[in-house]
Amino acid sequence: MTVRLAIDSTSDRLSIAADRAGGTPESAALQGARRHAGALLPLIDEVLGRIGATARDVSIVGVADGPGSFTGIRVSFAAAKALAAEGATLVTAPSLLLRAAGLAQRSQPSWRRVLAVSSALRGEVYAGIWSIDADRIGEVMAPKTISAKEIPSLPAFDVAVGDGPEDVLAAVGARREWPEAETLLRLIDVPGGARVIAAPLDFEPHYGRPAEAAAKWEREHGRPLPDSSGHHG
Image (cartoon, rainbow, N blue to C red; front, side, top):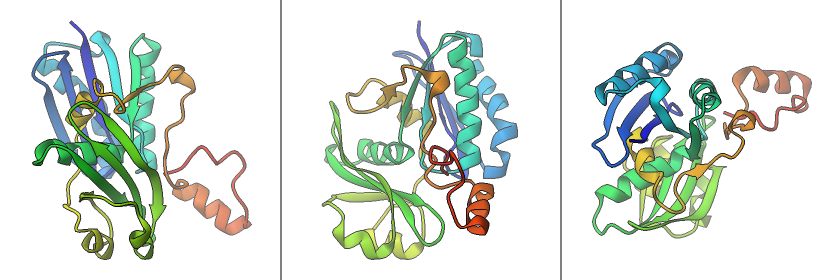
């Protein structure tokens, strides 16, 4: 039976989930972004162990593809690519979609046009909007960085979820929630949800902003870091 593993490390909260396709998922979470690197592999082993599996049994590995923590995303994709090198299929979904789909699946009515936001620092948020029902997910607005003053120009949405500056959350009426890896497991089977990465070892996730070291270099030199366009977070 197919063993599936899902990871979200895009925020201060590390979330891991695993199941045998069609079975009940197991999950675990850990708070504290600076703990992600050291805790990721032990937490993966723990969750897989609960379903009687090991890393060698994983046939599908899903990872939240940012935007979010540069270090957290690098750590989770390093683990996922190692599994892909051993034959696992890599699938990804935006971390904002995990928030949106998680809220929509718990809400009534089940169909929602959901705005998801997460902190982008500097008083801004990453934001994306999806239409979500039981059979399909449609992208209304791809994830991008916005400030509070840009909220009135967003496409229409029914409900909002996420974290970030209080003025932004208040302006959109967002429910403060974390992305859950268990939601990513569900997105694997939904059209418009998780996507399969054909060349996993070459794939670069969507970090969102430059890592702090890159940002400092760019400030000091007054120009973009060479070849830094694909490394955001």
